[in-house]
Length: 165
Image (tube, rainbow, N blue to C red; front, side, top):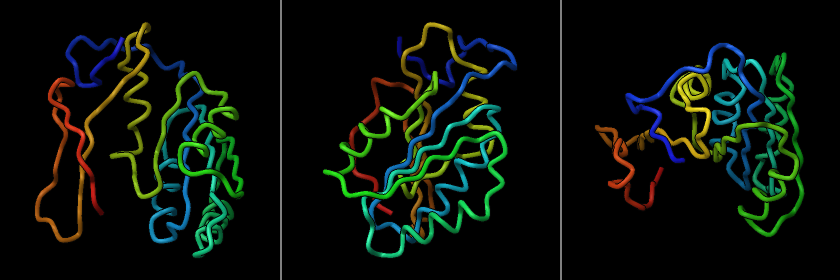
């Protein structure tokens, strides 16, 4: 079943949140990785496993990742970080999936952030028990744009288009 998070048919599951694995893969994105990691670590979901796989970055990304790890008070969050050469983004995602323990998996690419600290809690509390995939709206922003570009709430109207930052 595919469900729109904003559908009026959503029903809450209560406060017992399952383990959520957040996966971020990155290579040479020192300008954006910290914001992405901070967004993941700020989620108010009770149980989070956060996996950050770096593809042997050479631009300082690894140092930026380590800074966030050193500064973070991860509390209940299990944080796994590894930097090693891989065969590209999808190879790294497949490697991360083998480490994932969560009942739910959220992929947060480097350079992306959640729209709020309650994004995952909202998703879980409003999901149907039989849902296999849940999607929400994405918002594209660019420093030179005066407006935000939002995806449609209707899955049939979603378009595949590049997002530029």
